[in-house]
Image 1 (cartoon, rainbow, N blue to C red):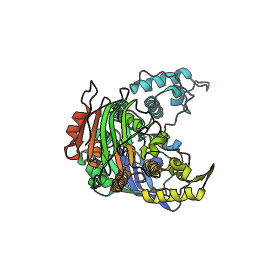
Image 2 (image 1 turned 180 degrees about the vertical axis):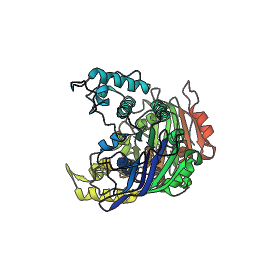
Image 3 (image 1 turned 180 degrees about the horizontal axis):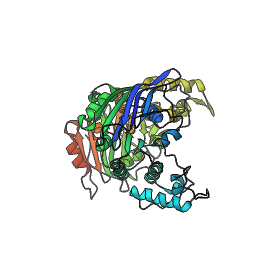
Image 4 (image 1 turned 120 degrees about the vertical axis):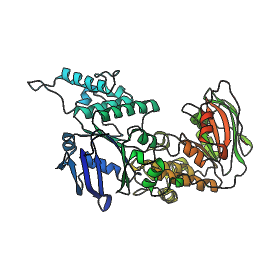
Length: 508
């Protein structure tokens, strides 16, 4: 790795907003040529710390030392001048401007007469993109036409154009597909090898262990530990972040399994859902595992009536059910928490109270008028029941952390009193603490007799929370395994099984 003397060192950093202390005597440093991961639950203080390092916030106490010299940042411009740049999760680019215009915005090279030297702008942008192995990107292309991964490369090039020596990356892979994640990780390693210090903020443990040289953990605004990545494992990091063992992440409730609530027979929709059969019982969590494109979400959409099945049979309590719309599914006692909560599960600018009652508006309204007292009463009860952390029920749901947003989506559908709850990636993009809380909610629901169909890409979650696991590949079910038989090895083999012709795998 790099030399042991830090390029940037923060010592005793404290910060409060009103009377709430969000950082308490935190120390953190970054060396040239290293990737230093910053971990912690939502609310641990990560965002505040990187905003102090990037000059957006001024600390109430503590020092920032760069190359052995104490610095005070009055703005992001000061931090940039000191060699610190940030690539945020929400990319800060102007879509109507070209790649080159964005890269050098506010920092355009000029001719001797003071006119912007556009030829030089394009040349330097091309050099920066080439250094990131982004050869297919035209510097004159407008940013609005680029993919998320391409825009991210533009942001990184923009940082490098300002001679960044430390690059802060805040959840950089949150919106990327797997292939783009791998390309970004290659770029990050290249930057490290050139001597750039990387501050890497992510919830994804696989990325942390693939990239980081060191890791620092914050909890409740306080420094917990800094470790070399080779000295820790995932269980240790989770324990440091949440203050309890990793086993508590999967609080599998052992409840009596009742009669069959939902039965699916030979269900089809094109090649995405092919001849699928299974049964789901009261108090059971049936996990659905499979690779991207295996048909997991398409199965959920067919069951919820968003893209109705073209053939086959769905039975509720043994009786045939026609589900051609989400409204019909809801009225039959089926609820669906979608994979993309931001686009499909919530209206982010709207208040928590309105999101919670969105699926049951007729119960809190009289004609065209909403009964505000009834709406507020339901929202307050949901906030208490699911421990949703918020300032008040009129707070826009988009201001909440990912875990609390997910709880609002779950609360919305619990208002319908479902008998079958379909959870598609229930803990994607949430921190480990919120993940544990959502798992505990699932345990409470099955104890009340709710039947849960849980789709997840995380094998530990599938193995830890399921009573049985339905494995899909190529739109078909390849195997249904009892909990005791659902080892990662057996699941992996079933997930990668080649399916040429439709097959049937039934539940009990």
